[in-house]
Image: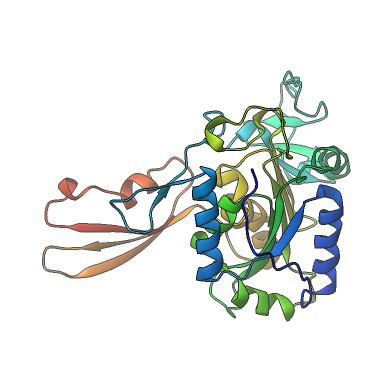
Length: 319
């Protein structure tokens, strides 16, 4: 079922290019309603209450403001085989392996997809055709949410402004935690001409009503999942997954993948990072920022248990 919210369905104030983009996606996805998010506590609580009533999340009563969402077991991680960079020129993304490209055996993946251990590539025009078919009518019976958000502090010259369209209220409340989203970001959005804004489109891929069984009240479409990135268009399009790394487009999709393309153009670097603090037994707190590739132990370091370093307090601030 869809969650209830008192929708703000006015696109006034959005830059013309973004307003046109949003309207185009509304026409394509055919939601029952749409809502421009303001990031307020009232909006957040309304979404949490609606998801709790619908059984999407459950409150953990021993903790303050803490909820659990149980997911479909097939939708619990990033899917490297379905994570694709789309450009005109393949050599901008990958090189041809000496042994050639492996055949695509998954019937749900595009036949012209080029897969390598270092990444997957497909022609952007071909991928857009495939995605248009998957997104056509995909939000029927659901609310389309428009999330203006910032990656970085407001008004910083280093911050990136973006807008995500999604049909998942779980994504909305999670983006409020993971990014600076809502009215402040909307104000920065209004001052932009729209040309540098990163555009993100996401859907769980389950229009309503559906005959498809929904596992754990977690709508997803694992067979049709695609997480695609268009660096030449500053655009992210993700279909079929509700898992955070695939649906919270500001995280891996923008900060790392599109971020790497922006970094190349603008002269900076993008990498997986952590921010943590360590307080020693004397009460002196030090902050650490670390940049390491995936699978180097950032999470283990940032979430050290108290008994690992007796007398020290380790706090994870962000990853």
